[in-house]
Image (cartoon, rainbow, N blue to C red; front, side, top):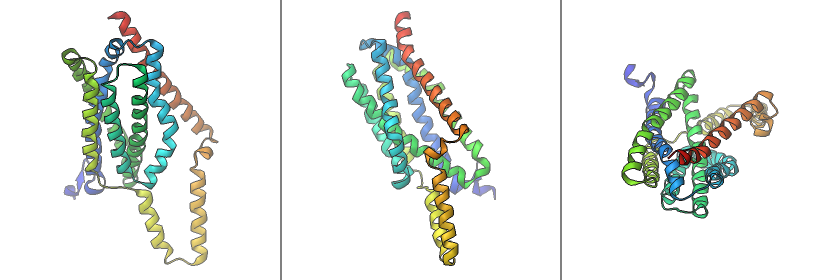
Length: 271
């Protein structure tokens, strides 16, 4: 029935949650994009050197490096939606604090807090999207591609808004825009239904086990333990393919941060 579909996806289970998720992230990434034209002027306005700017930009990445694994475990135990909302609130407060900072020593704690918020929110939204794709595996690529497209569109529109805001009100104002976008995203996330496909499957297994013999139940437990062991990150990194993917992702992140570090310095020379 077409009335039960949204964008060709089951409306209640997948379509509506996906639309809310992508709409919330669209607003967020407009805010993120607004930062790009403001970075050079902000760094210039508070007198950041190239090395100091690098430290400030790497602070969120350091926090994420330390907190991604604990945050991932909390996503599983506390909930996807809860971690997404909590992370977004921390991001909003961190950007609000950044707008008031004028020294490197003040900026570093604010940017570390940003990294902590990102670790919570990004682990949560990736797990949430993965749960949605598990509900409709045939559209896994479409859903993932839609998320990337929406985020890219936000990054296209954001710099236009950020550039006008910088001209009218000054570079620190853009961090207020990002903070507002993060709060708006939090509001959007609050409308999402709670989803945890792993918990749903565990409940199904418990129901099945009630009709199993003791030997069948033991066999199922062994299979589950084998699946958990195979998904451990240390086991995953024994695979050449996983090591290549991890190295490529690290190189991509390194290049992105290096470019962001150089933009303020380059712009300062040209302005």
